[in-house]
Image (tube, rainbow over all chains, first blue to last red; front, side):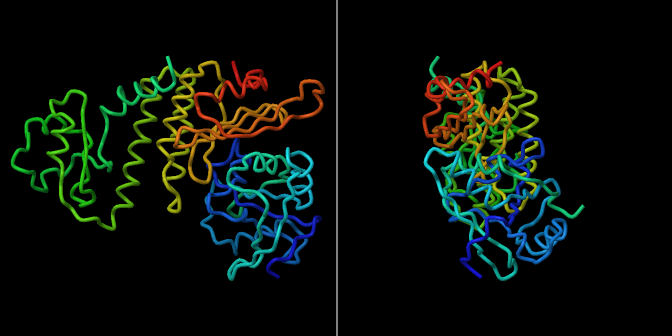
Length: 139
Length: 237
């Protein structure tokens, strides 16, 4: 439901454009906000009730409202790791939150709240806790 | 030489001679519209392959162009190329073409004229990024002002290694010198000449700990700000 906080044990994926990748891996730029963004768009993988990550990613690919580029990637992150790492590592004990932000055609859509477009250091820390990456397009 | 002076010279030497108006159209089809009576046709013919305004698209009321060898002054040019053309829905496209052309010229500048030591790699990476954003219909071109500032910075800091280069969501240049989680120096070059930087560096007294800093500063003072945090230990050659 909209506004629900995602459990720490759950996972999210972030669509990372090719322009933000370094050596085919997400960089801090993959997690930066645009000036008018209220939160960073991600997808909640456990939302679909599927256990296999590949199946979860297939669902995300089907529903995400973006044109998926062949050279782009999805980064998978653990919710608790993101929140804890930024709080413990950053200079201001920043507390991020991840909320469910469903959209009509993209029911697993969610958002990382708690930082702004100028907080590049938060984006860099998030990039450090990427667990795995998947091709943007189905292999 | 001061950063500002270098920037000005860079623009005078390279950008101004290649300045195109606000669009990036080529000379093709120039004959398809009427010039005012004093056309300076012979001067115009001197630029068969130069870029000129995309006037036929009816995009701009005031269009400038210039050339280093041209007898036309800026004032002449202004007078010559002032057209009272209504704004059109193609304005956005006009802007896009203009930025594309500027990016092309900046990349060419890096390849052909800059003294940046890793110019070939840099130009190739920028070309790659430029193509990537232009292939995406949802994307705007790389910010030419950001790229210009980045080039100016690299020319002023010749000891820096070749960085990883990515684009921010607004398509500004972000350069990153990173060899480990505690040796990270990343900089966004804003169109205004400001920079946003992030530094992760070993703590001076306890190297197992990481100092993490970030901030905004002008391009001129970026290295002065960063050097005390020993970024040159991993970012320089």
